Length: 122
Image (cartoon, rainbow, N blue to C red):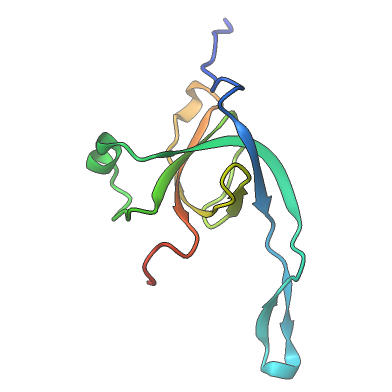
């Protein structure tokens, strides 16, 4: 099988992102309420957050997007829907909504993300 060149985001555009790993405990004293970890663990990866284009808004079937919706590009870092990360470039925290897959064509990943606290409650 032939190896073909795979598109990559230029390293100069990528910067550090910190994936926030969920953690915490159920507080039995307060009726079993979830108590998030005070110092959650983080995992570093490289990525870039860019605005959604008009074409994205027109063709994506995943639902309604707000002005806080953006796209995250990575060179192969796989994230699950609901995962949160902080962009160290601007300090904004985002939540992954959905993956926009390229399928088996290449390892570059892109996601629809929403600024944490920016979306309307559901």
